[in-house]
Length: 469
Image (tube, rainbow, N blue to C red; front, side, top):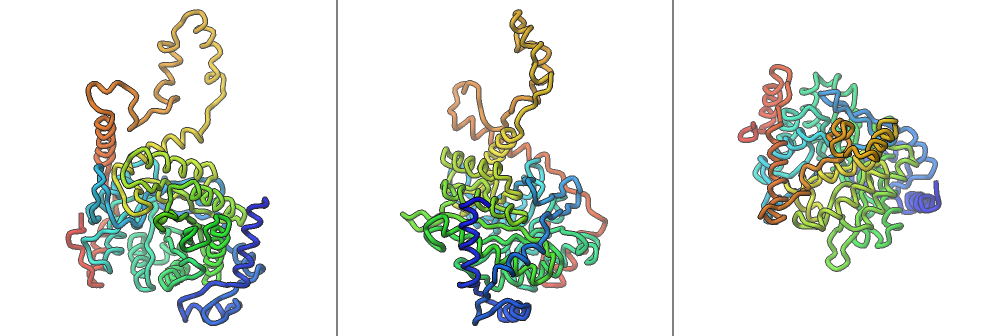
């Protein structure tokens, strides 16, 4: 471990040993204490030895299984995957007008994600619909994700029974409880509460996921200058302590529980006190997150394509590109919030989603490098060019012109022909969106699967109603 990482690690160990982590759940607090963790009131204190031992019991790789094995994800090592936005309560349209999200928006993003080759992961809280009963929203959203996707699925956190309902739905969809528990099939994100706390929702979500042998992402989100120290090193030291405590708790709940180190440290705008995810400080923290996780031998989540901009503009482009470039170069295993995010997690945007796909395509092309085989070096082609054969019409160019250069879907390089640049840009975004939606095809399901899910939900008093689409 190099010096900056070593310093952060040592500070985190000191925090866990001397300050501890508050556990807002009497039952689980007592259980964790009974398993050897020192307790004082509602605070648990972890020794260095305990942390290192518990981290070592967590898998270094997680294979998340999709209904279509072509979309299986192996989190860990240097593999990288993208995830769309998560958790936004609002939609910002192409003109920057904000409105509350609806279930129809959720279905739209399910289909966009499903049709896009950039993603192996779908579902979760792509947006938070405002037009369905809050206590019914997560089961209905998971039902929609199960029925609309053959990719890996994100779950949702909640209190014990709420998460159990989601797990029981997955068991119905995946051939029974035993078949579901036999392998990781849904990935759930839980947050620490900075500074140095876990609430009952996070803890009960971890407990249920561990019981069902499903992976969790431990994702503290300390905000430098607001919920954590203003210095990046201090914010990272505290967030790392929270993440390590969460990983340790999952292993105390059930040894070998698959867990993702998901520190998502951010910064504060000191002028407003609001969170900032478009700053270079955020990207520096994402870089450190990846390096810490790889030091601990854990799969990692971090970074993404977020921005503080409130519409699709130059700011949203350069901020998202910076974050995605850093995340990809640091080989973050899972980059949630990679498409669609505006207003510092405050809103999702279809237009931003489409432009982020363009950025992801550029980043992947850049990271893919180039070949140096004989045909790629093209010395004989150069010789013919020197003799006057035009490169543009050469057979070598015709053979490779559709596969070798990066070809944009949204970016425009030609004349405007009387239109404004914005008109061309908006038209190409709309066309790309329409192509994805037109390409969507519902996945095949076992006969009666939907009826089984609906019967289960109705037995709980959760009406399918207008969410049946």
